[in-house]
Length: 330
Image (cartoon, rainbow, N blue to C red):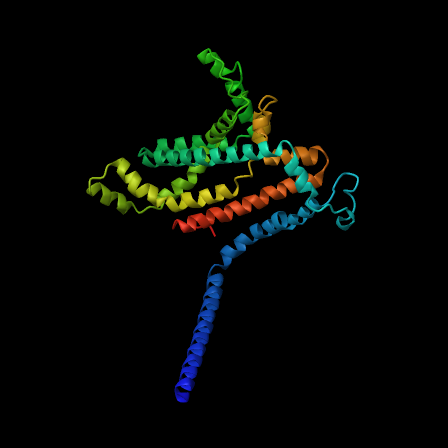
């Protein structure tokens, strides 16, 4: 019995030593592979270095400014050192959450984001599928070029055109002899108007990514489907859409992560006094309550809340994609 105990102890010790040697060997191989890979891609790494420096300088270092969210930062003490400003703890967050406009602003932001992601994604995919099926190459290139030109047009110009077309007494009202008032309806219908304008502006640009993904699909699959008698719609459903599915998932994850980062520029330019309640989003709310009221701590608290919720949504969307067996961003 004693001999058996010592034999078992020796076997366990041998297994532990063998596992440790194996782990050490794998670690050395990984390190060697990483160094070789880094050396092979040294030029690509050097090309990416300026972007990394820009990211650190303009995205990570400014995070130090989040300390203002826990301080009373107003023009009277703005010139003081950071440690000389009075700390107020979570008071700025409480003021933001208790504000009468906060709940409606949060609803507006979420509503616009969900509509924007849904409508924008579907329209970009449909437009990319349409372009991908066009066999007249010159017409395809001209159409694609025209479609993404609005992306480079300022929102000031887009908003001016939209107001001339959709406002009371605008072009649509004149053509149909009615009063639609799409730009002056104080209801969630204003969200749909904004989303449709934004989709028209960005659909061509967003379709570029999906077109690139479609270009990477093996053309032999289409030939085999043709031989099997599949029509065009069946080839799109069973080959093209599954082929770009990883791209769709990654872009959706990124879109959900930025759900609360709805830009205030288009809201400010497209809105008016009538639709103010359904036009204000968190970024605009932070600007009005923070810079507009000279309470920089409150504005920073709202922006910090917006960023933290976005990070949480990003990781949740990424986790759900992993559970569903889809491509993950991280």
